[in-house]
Length: 83
Image (cartoon, rainbow, N blue to C red):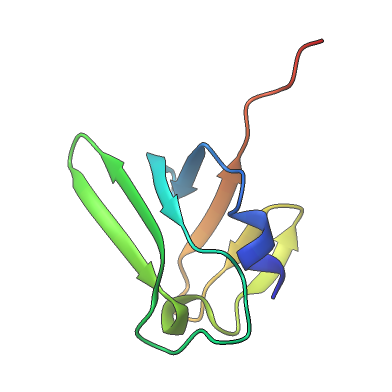
C-alpha cells in the first residue's frame, strides 16, 4: 500500500492544513489488521492516531499526498537532505 511507504520517513504530517510532528509509523507488512495503529502524530493541540482501517482505500492525489476515505487530505513531509 503506497500510503504506508509514504509515511515511513516523514518527519512532519500535514492534515487538512494543520501541521503535526510524526512520532511513530508502522513497518508495512501483510499482517496488519483494521485496528492496528499505523501512524502516531502530535501537535500543540494534541495527538492523533491513524489505524489501518483509517488509511485503507486512500487515494493518492500527488506524490506523498493522499485523500482518506473520510475526506481528510494527508501530506507527508520530509526535510531535504543536504550533502
